[in-house]
Length: 207
Image 1 (cartoon, rainbow, N blue to C red):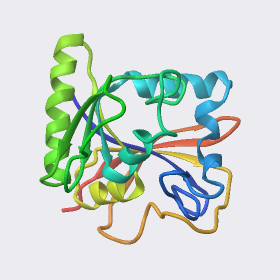
Image 2 (image 1 turned 120 degrees about the horizontal axis):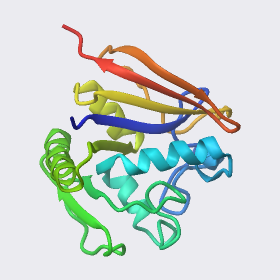
Image 3 (image 1 turned 90 degrees about the vertical axis):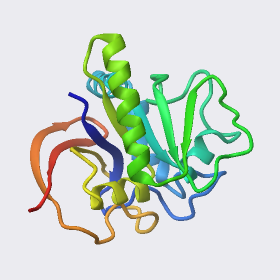
């Protein structure tokens, strides 16, 4: 069964970027420390990254994150979705207007202008098609940014939340949680590695 999984790295003080994120510094000042685990040679961290990439039947991201990964300092032939694991699922971008051009033409991009819920629906359809074609269960992964993941949680669109808790305090930046709708989480797994603590929760819908 296709699940909607929000998967994001976060600091101990709740930030998914450092201060001043932008096209030339997508993770802001000090934000690269959030993703140290994704570029590690630690076998367990490589396994987590490989499995997360392999389960992705479709990926949802916001327009700001798209502009970073498709920008001149973004993804390339050797580093793409899944950091060192260059995965190529369908990518669904939530945006108010599609870009005039795309640099990463080798990837499957769909731009949804009618809101996050419609983007998740489109991603689910793509993931279910990919599941049928591959013969294995594939999921929809919400990779960010923080506002997209937070909005999806508030809207009750997320089945599973995976946090990669980095041992860093950024002090400022983009917060993952800014209030919103309360959610009950059920812990499924905790994996401690050399660069992060990886937490997986089922997200329950409140009555």
